Each structure stands twice: as C-alpha cells, then as structure tokens.
Image (cartoon, helix red, strand yellow):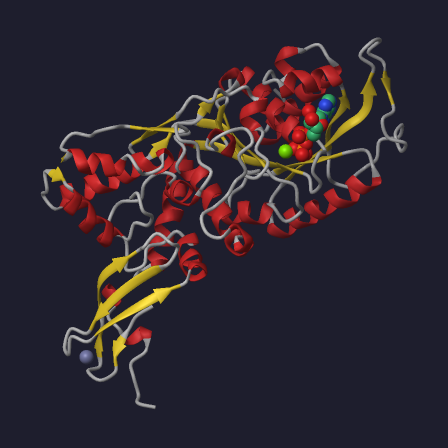
Length: 148
Length: 298
Ligand SMILES: Nc1ncnc2c1ncn2[C@@H]1O[C@H](COP(=O)(O)OP(=O)(O)O)[C@@H](O)[C@H]1O
Ligand SMILES: [Mg+2]
Ligand SMILES: [Zn+2]
C-alpha cells in the first residue's frame, strides 16, 4: 500500500508508526514536497490480517528471528517455554529503567524482543539501550503492545 | 478523475517487497531441510483412528534402529507428540537462528505446540479478537507450521515425520511447504466409515502428486489383556479389506490397551512392550517404510 500526493505527484513517505496496544495501528505519511501529513488508521481486523501474513509493511529492518510468527502471535505461549541466549558479544548495555520496561513484556517473547532492540541499537552504533532508544526502535520496527 | 500513477509506476525500492520477504521464508525452509534425507506425513482424514499413536511408535522404532529421527507435530490444536514420546517440558533453547527441539524416546527430536503453550489446559489462542480469529487462523497456522519446519534445529536427520491433524484437506498446506514431501502413510480403522473418509485423503494426496507409501489398518482386532488372544473389534472384522487396488497395506495393528496405555504415558509401546502383537505390527510397518525409502529390505 502506498500513498501518492495527487497535488504534487510525489510518493508520500512514512515517517512514523504507532501501535497504541489496542490492536489498531497508525501509520503516518508525509509528502516530501508540500509536507502535507496524513495518518492511516487500521482497525484490529485489518491490523491482524496484515500481521498474520508475517511480513513487514515498509520492508524488514532487522533479520528474521526464529519462531518469530509464533512468538509474536501466540497469546497462550508459556512464560518459560523458551530460553534465549541472554547476551551476545557487542550487545549494548541496558539502563535500569529500560530493563524494567522490557521485563513487562510476556516471557514468551521477551528474549526475542531484547534481541530486536539489541540488534537495532548495535546497527546504529548505540552502546546503551535507554527508554528513548526503546521508543525510537519501537516506532521504527513497528512493535506492538504496551510492554514492548 | 485526474490521472495518477499506479503502484507499478513507483520505484521498486520504495515498496515493501512482500514477495521478496515471502521468498526469503521459502529459502530459509529449503536450507534447513537440506540436511534431512526423507520427510513423510502420517494422515487419516478422521480423528481418533490412531495417527498419533502410529507416528510416535514408528518414530521410536526407526530411532531405535539407529536412524536419526525428528517429528513435527502438525496437529497444532491437538498436540500430542511431546507427551507420547515422553519429551520433557524443559524450556527450549533459542540459539542463533533456530530453536532446539525437545528430545523424546530413543532420542527422537520433537517440535510441538505442546512444548510452547503455558500449560496442559492452555488452548492455542492467537492475538486479535477471538470471535473473529477464524478468518486468519488458517494463515497463522500455516506460518506456525512453516516455522516448526524451518526454524527448528533439526541437524542431520534420516527421517522427519509429520503427524497431521484430522481432516482430509490437511495435507494441502504441508504440500505447499514441502513440495518434495517423500510420501504419506494413511491410517484407517477396519470400518466402512473410516475407509470412506481415508479414501478422500488418498485421492487428495494423489492429486497433489505425493507418493502414497501405503495404509495401516489400526485397531484391527482387540487383544485381550488376560489371554492375549485377538478377537474382533469391529463388526466388519475377519476379512481384512483392501483400501484400493495398488495401495499396499503396510501393517495391521491390533487394539491393545496395555500398549496404548504405555504409549500415552510417554513410553512408546514398541520400546516398552516389544513382544506385544501391536509392537511387532509396528516394527513390520517400520520395515515397510524403510523398504520404501531405502529401496531394499532391512
Ligand atoms: N492400536 C491401539 N491400541 C491401543 N490404543 C490405541 C491404539 N490405537 C489408538 N489407540 C488409542 O486411541 C486414542 C486415539 O488415538 P490417537 O493416536 O490420538 O488418534 P489420532 O491421532 O488419529 O486422533 C488414543 O488414546 C490412543 O492411545
Ligand atoms: Mg493425533
Ligand atoms: Zn504534496
């Protein structure tokens, strides 16, 4: 799905993604010429329809994680069913409040979410994951849900 | 209306490249299964005919003979493989690009929804409103099955066996994922109804071009736990039926409560009570499967 500014015949660029955690999604687009902004809002059905395909709108920004679809979509996954490798060499450190926020993510996906944040930060040369880093990564990766 | 450009007029690099992402998933699956020599599926059409009991015992029999065996529990909503193979519920380790499978009887590697759910009573609920989930459930299940196959650290395997859920159409998504599925083993009961339904699975497999290894007649007779004599279980018993000309019968497995109980407690009967008639029938099935794939009598 793409948006074209009819006035300028320019393709609008996505500049923000929001997932309020109520199952809906807000995608923000802006015309690079006249700077007009629009928001595309999807209802839970549309959001789910897209996410059930397990593809990333706007293209992937990180490597695919093992069991990614199951981990992000299974609501009844066990807290300790999976054990992730906690840290890899070159992983950024986590501030206390960032770690605390991460701990609010269900155990079934937590390890994977940690990996996504770590990889995202490392790719950008960031050596510490803070709440602000989490917010930027979350918007960029289009992660859903309150805890994430 | 003002003439505007269409989607295809936009530069390709700015698109989401959905096709590319899907192709990458297919490639990931292909690479993982490169180290698997043979894959086959156990299916029936009807539920409760003993597919899972047959899968677990066949897997254990093959592993016990020294083959490296993995089992994918494709029955996502009624998983049983971890239980039947006695695979523990320790957390599964997530490594670089894969999840380590659980280890069951005779070292069979198992991946099952059982191992991922929060408890024995937990159903498979996907995110999104439950009432409407029937719309996308199929897609999510197909994704889950793809990940079980492609993201499990199978390593080198001689046999990867899929235990399918009931339903004559359930082989379709499997064929979609595994174009070179090595074959199917059909399981049926000696009853008209079961035979009627399994023949639909047979036709479906043929239409997809999947080799039919043969069929297993399960619960063909009842083994008396006291005297071990076999008596009829179904009225049509006595003369064993033929599913269809050209489809070989691979084994006749009698109903044996002790064998069933052992298997259900995580000790596949082929290992726990190897002298029983049911165990010998399942060993005969393993022979036939090996002959099919290895091209010679074992
Ligand atoms: N030959 C047999 N002897 C004893 N019990 C059996 C036999 N075949 C199946 N059962 C039992 O019947 C029930 C249904 O079998 P199952 O393998 O779960 O069927 P399916 O997978 O086809 O739904 C299980 O409790 C199983 O232990
Ligand atoms: Mg079953
Ligand atoms: Zn414009």
